[in-house]
Image 1 (cartoon, rainbow, N blue to C red):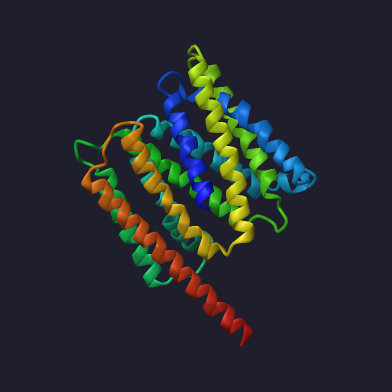
Image 2: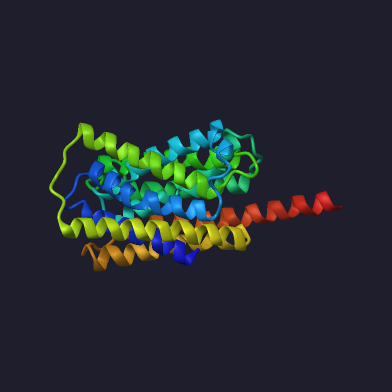
Length: 284
């Protein structure tokens, strides 16, 4: 999980560096042309493409739609705001998933986890700061990306058993690349320098590595123990923002991030207790 998190933030960093020269649609399209074949080969190697019937399921399509929307919204936000702020807002996803599972899927959520969700959203307000001079439309794009990721993750929860993870990843990669092609068709095409292409290649490789490592983490480790390590992405993001982009995070952003991490970890802890309690009752 630590390696996966590093892969995701390095992917974001390389893509953000490329955004200095290229339009968002170009980055999505060109990175997709590099990453999609790699992911498809990995899926083929794992025999994940043999179960095509699973990939036609309606929840797979909804998940893919969420993935496509999340990519466009998040990258748009990332390219126009500090990387640590965009990354921090994305850490709302675990809390939003708890709320979404309760409100949409009907899962039972107690008052403690609801309290953690509300406190976590207060942390988001510290990062976004609506009404302040630092607030801008790109923060809303990042929040909208959280909504799209919520659609993706809730769809994942109701996928049929046996749906191949890498098969879904391949479908998502192709769909996202298609989105980039549409954006390029109706947008602008800027000259692609060797440096920008290098950044996109690095981004694609790290994205593939991240997918591979997170798959290994989820298959080999207990989710409740592995998941908390994903919050190390915030440490990476803050360090990269300072060293690579020369921007220091301010106090409200750090405070909001600390609240988000604390509430996210508490929610994971409570989910583990609830799961353990259910298993004990089921066995007794």
